[in-house]
Length: 174
Image (cartoon, rainbow, N blue to C red; front, side):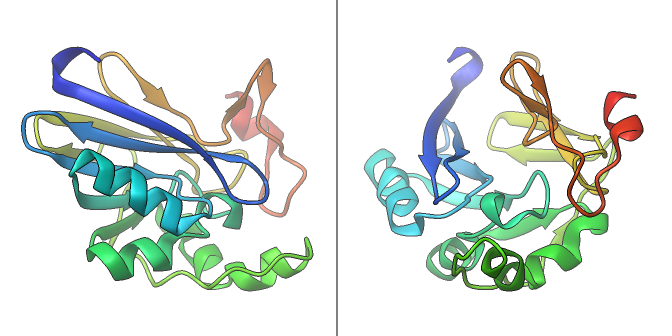
């Protein structure tokens, strides 16, 4: 990828969530975006590339995007980032997963809240934060000059679901 940015895409967890390892080729620093499960598999991908994890970033608080937070935090000590409006969701993700008949470990609390206009620096890469509520109150998107990570704000050929608690169709389309 251009500008020394590399993206490794993994489909993880029981709900087949897109997880991204965004890395700076020059520094070997990375951010893991939406680690929705399969922590050991994500760890192997990080180790294969010889990367150091600076950040674990959740685009929103649903367990299918956050299930491996605890695992990755434990092995890397990385800083966990999420929007304040979704922070309480990750602390209760085991309850949410149980409603789907699944077991996940609750996430550790976030280290830092991110919001509209914030910058997340990963080596030579600058991610800009957009607050994109609608799927959840604290949904965010992350963008660079070439790439946007949207979480569940958009689905292939559609918009994200708004029928879960906290979802709001009008917010999502605006």
